[in-house]
Amino acid sequence: MGRTLIVGGCVLSLDRKVGNFRRGDVLIEDGLVTEVGESIRARDAEVIDATDTIVMPGFVDTHRHLWESLFRGIGSSMSPAASECTADDVYAASLIGLLGAAEAGITTVVDWSEVSTGPHTEAALQAHSDSGLRTVFVNASSDWQPGSRSLDSASPLTTFAAGSARLEEWAAARELGMRIHAHAGIGSAHADTSQMAPMLGADVTLVHCSNFSDTELDAVAGSGARIVLTPSSEMASGMQPLQIQKLVDRGIRPGLGVDTERMAPGDLFAQMRAAISLQHATLFDLKLAGKAGVPKLLSTRDVIRYATLDGADAIGLGAEAGSLAPGKQADVIVLRADRPNIYPINDAIGAVVWGMDTSNVDWVFVAGQPVMRNGVLDADLDRARNLAAAAQQRLKGAARALVETGSGGMG
Image (tube, rainbow, N blue to C red; front, side, top):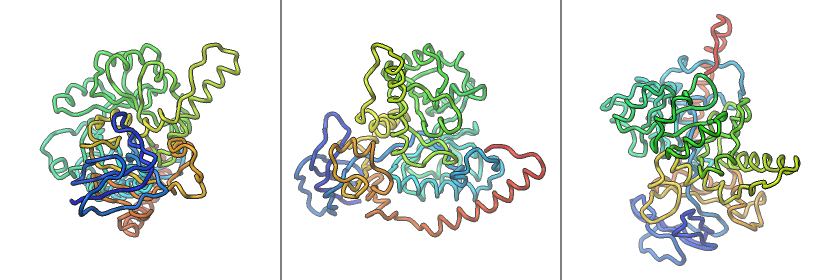
C-alpha cells in the first residue's frame, strides 16, 4: 500500500501519550499510522502538504439507519416501511448515506439495519464495501448465523454486531462472539431496563437511553457497558434528551451518532454542537434557578473525544480507531483551517467543535486509503445519485399505495 506523509498541519492526535502538535506530521504505512510528531522524514512517501489545516482522527458515527438515507429531511412524514425496500433500494440508500458520511469526515459508520435478511443484507454489505469506509453492520433481524454468503463476502473493513432489544437473544449473540447493540430507555418497544442490569457487560452498546433513571445509569456505569447518543434526532423526534451531566457524573463517556437523516444532519459537527449546547443549557438553567454547586461546563476537549475515540470505544473499536497513534488504523481527516468560516484559528479543538462544518473537510483516509482528495470524493457520484433517485421514485410510489390502502407506517 505504500507510504503517505501528511506534513505541516496542526495535528490533534487525541491520544494522551502522543499528544497534539501545533505543527506536526503523520506517517502512514501499509494502512497504519506509524509515526506522529515533528519533522518526520520518510523516503518514497507520497507527501501531502497540510499547511493551514487541522489533521485529526476521522469521526466515528456510532449509530445510523442507513436505509433511511433516501428520506433525508422528510421529518416525521409518512414514508414506506423497511419491508417495502427492495435490495436495490437498500444498496442505493446505504451507498449515498455512506458517501455523505465520508464527505463529512466520518470514517467509521455503525449501520443499524432493520432490512438485514438475505439479498438485502448482501446489498447493504456491498454498499459498505464500495464506499471504502470502516463500518459496523448491526443486524437487527436475529439472522446471525455464521458462515452465510453475506458474512463471508463482507469487506475486511466491516465488522458485525447483533441488534436486539430482546434480552433473551443476548445470550445467543454472545455465543457467536458478537457485540450487542440495543435501543434502550425510549419506550416499551426497546430493551426492558428493569431486567437489563444483570445482562449488561462491556460487550453491550446502548443507544439513546433517554429516560434512564439514576439507578439504571448506575448499573451501566458499574457494568462497563457503553452508551451512544444521537442528540439532534433525539430532540427533533420528541425524545426526552438524556441529561449528559448524569453521564459525566458517573464517568460514562458516550459516543455520538446521527441516527436518522429524516430529521437530523448527517455529520458529527452538528452532533458535537448539539451535545455540548444541551449540557450547557441544562447547567445555565440550574444557575438561573439559583442552584448551588452547579457542575463545570462540558469542554470542547471532552466533546471532540465523544465524536472520535470515545465513540470508537463505545462500539468496541477503540483499539484500532478513534485516535492517531502508532499501530492504529490510519483513519485520518484533514480539515481546512484557512476558510472564511473558521479563520483565524484561536483554538484548534474549539474551532472543530464550535465552528467547522462539512465544507472544511479536505482529505479523508480510511485504513490509509484516500476516499476524499482535496475536497473531492473518490467515488462515482453520478452513479450513486442516479441509483438514489431511482430508488426514491420507486419508494414514493410505494408510499402513495400505502396511503391509498390505509396501511402506511413509519419506517
